Length: 577
Image (cartoon, rainbow, N blue to C red; front, side, top):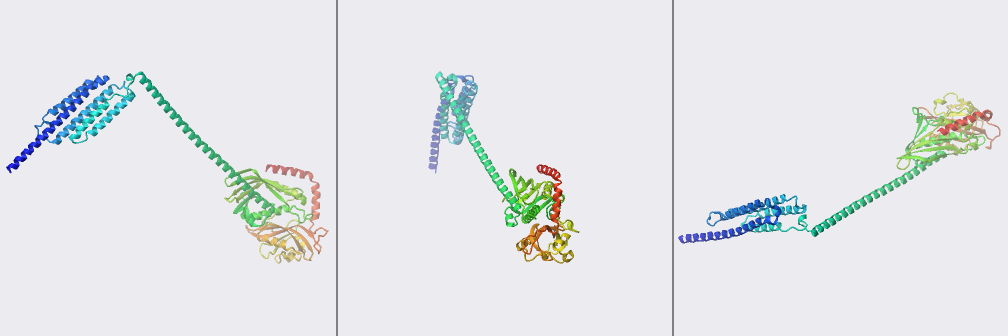
């Protein structure tokens, strides 16, 4: 055991000697590096003559720092006679001293550079600051290790960084006083070329931006022009389609078309038509809006009935004694050039005039002008229509065309026909439901048919006037209009009570009671006697219409001047409308 203890003591002494040898080697290496650092710090004022104001201070600091480092190295802490000190403590002290020396050097460089800031060019100052920052960051990264061996390598790296900082500046980093004339001229040319290059780049970028903006504006303009052209084309096509629909409507109205399928191709099922109240035409009392003095025609069937009422009105101008089968023709004109289209609405002027009224016995042609406002659905069908015109001017034209001084009002309600019928034309009233019994007749009807009112009122229908020669087609057409409650004009061959044939031209008007059709009124506008073979007789009819017409003609001839005045008034009213 004693021998083993002696061997352990010898081995421990050997280890201590080895450690002392290593520490002495480290001291020598550190002293050599410290001397190099001190010599480099002292040589700094010679390389930078402009830093001579505070150069001695920095040199003294460096010399003091190196002296302190030398004293520390010669102190008992680093000597071999201190075996109790641990190796970790020595490493920590060594790292601390390295950090202090690096910080002092960087601070001295920063102080010297701040003193000469006004004289050093911007490029030199920026490069020096960048070098100092890089050096300090590099020193911090080097001093973060813990081992003494790494610390030695860090000191070598620190010396290489100082060499880099003290390396002579390039011509770009030199100030103007340090440059030669050739270097200064070369620097100016370099700056001019760089400025020209930057200017060209800015101009090119500006031109590219202008081109891009111009291209975008051109595309926007082309898009806008194409959209406007497309919108104008669509508007024209829409206006043309709607004008065609309105012309089709007027064509059906002038031809008195009765087929519902044809009307439904241009009219919506819920179509409404607003018209002024016209006392010379037949219409249901339920359509009248008294507060607005206008009619509101609803639905396709109502439009067909209104067209039929207009046909009955105009055909009453025909002289049936001369033209028994004459039909008035009239046409509408739509002034589409002045039409205004807005959304689904269209406004336009229109005109209506007869074309053959004079040739069928009328005194003059009649016509009217006005405005319309139509609203269409997506299928270009009419949803609503408003027709406006001068009612009184058209009434004056009808009065002059018929050659009558008294204008006959067309009855539309049952209340207006109660009591004895006025006038010299045969009239008969029947119920609106089967079996269509006669409810009232006047004296002229009794003379025409030879039936007394006591014999037929409430007992018989107008079938008593039908016979073998009565036209079945005309009778079916009459009953069809009766079923749809439409006004109509009919021409029938009838028989009187004695069996004699006569031709009866009759206008039939539906009459309303509390907005419901309850009766029909038949007014004979012309009657002529026929032979048993169906030919016309030469003698005038018993109704006395011919004699009355002759008297009216004489009265009219004596009042030519008054008619001229009325014509002037009518033309003035028509132009104003």
